[in-house]
Image 1 (tube, helix red, strand yellow):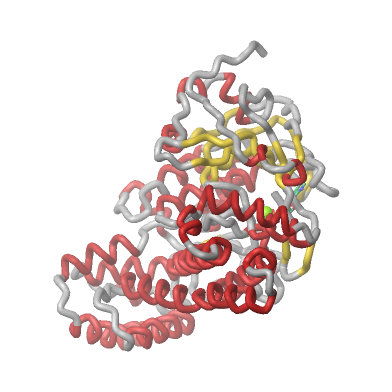
Image 2 (tube, rainbow, N blue to C red):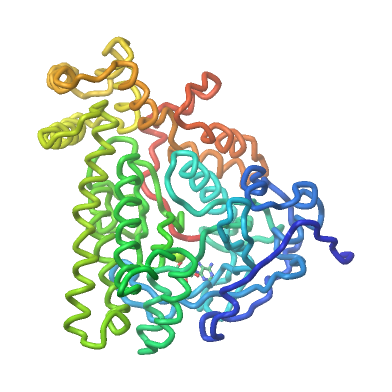
Length: 494
Ligand code: AMP
Ligand code: MG
């Protein structure tokens, strides 16, 4: 391929300037026959990329790892992690390469990463590749999450490689271009902690403060402050997930990003029928990462982060523990407050008071008992608040009588408030999505995509751009799966 002319693509790399034990320099593999599936135009604009260039052969060459533009400095980042509670001192980017960083139009520095571009020194037994299915899944779900207002890594592009990978049999390979505020994880801190390298922990913490938490520098103890700011972002993030029925599925410490974005869309899913113990991951046998347990695990993960920071928080380890506990101690309060407030808004209660917690609890119990679809419940409750009939809402229940009884209580709560009904409706509409990426639809899109047909994939990506809007052309996508369509498990294997 000819030398590539690169208008407007300006890398400004910082992670590669850190000490060389933070990463390994690796070149991507050559794909056999790359093909473009989709480019995320809006995100490309945010990054200040030239769309014509990105859509050209040169753009595809970058997105497939075939030829990286000048200024790219591809590296695989080192990290460790607790996976399902088990400790691994060395994980690292085994099938991903950070090719560089770009200062976006909003002034935020963002990583550009190729996921599925070949082996690295961290690949262990893995092939370093991604199958097309998980690439499509991550594109669909991460972009839907962004549209739903959840902090998340983004998908800039999806391509096919023309190579086959071995997963559940031979499958077509793909590469996702992931964009993130950074790829530093709790596991990145753990990597150096495990090597008793407090100097590296400090270097990493200074990097994180500069990039993500500059306010921490105003504090007497910037590292303790950084911890408490990370705690705050994580607590809010997990509450937000739960308010949408989202189950991350693999909340290992290596999948918890320090900047507070959702990362690593492996076995994640939005639940259909509400049950607090719902899990999706095929390997989550004990419900460790169930919907309701996500806050507990989030806090546990943050404790693992705190472990790594103790030596740099204070020379006196006992004192450091007291200081760190103060930061971690905020988790429960922030989480509870955020999730109550989010569910109050979903229920149309705008003037929160403590009694409303009872209504939320009662609602969960009633939904569990009646096997109510989570998203449809709040969607149709919104319609009831708009003066619509209760028929569809109550048809979601095993026992419609339970629905009628619950509505009486709900109306009592509503009537105690002095809220303008239009204002209430506006809030409910903004908090209760019409569309979420349902697993059975994603499965359908993946199956077609594996056969070379990306129509369903594009349809889903387009539909989920406006998840809170009435879009008559996508009514079909609102529907819960039929018994035959239910997807019970999703797999980590990317
Ligand atoms: P995950 O479960 O997707 O968060 O990945 C956990 C670890 O396994 C990370 O270190 C990944 O880089 C690595 N990994 C996952 N899939 C592959 C693969 N196909 N080849 C090499 N490494 C992989
Ligand atoms: Mg991961």
